[in-house]
Length: 73
Image 1 (tube, one colour):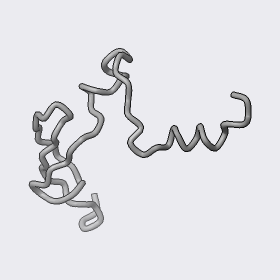
Image 2 (cartoon, helix red, strand yellow):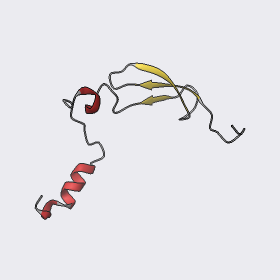
Image 3 (tube, one colour):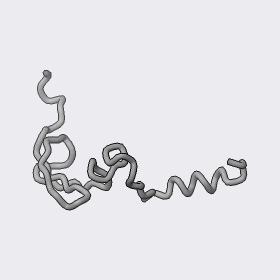
């Protein structure tokens, strides 16, 4: 690998949706930063079998429904 072209690789704390903390190596943030997850393997339907519904925190689904409401879907 070439020197000086790759980002720094360091440890951060990752806070899962149930409150547990794990350490991961990443290029995100700085050494010792904490990343809080909105969705993780404990809450995502792909891992839970689809019984959990995801929340639309950005309002994208409602924007889509409002935009295409008159098309008869």
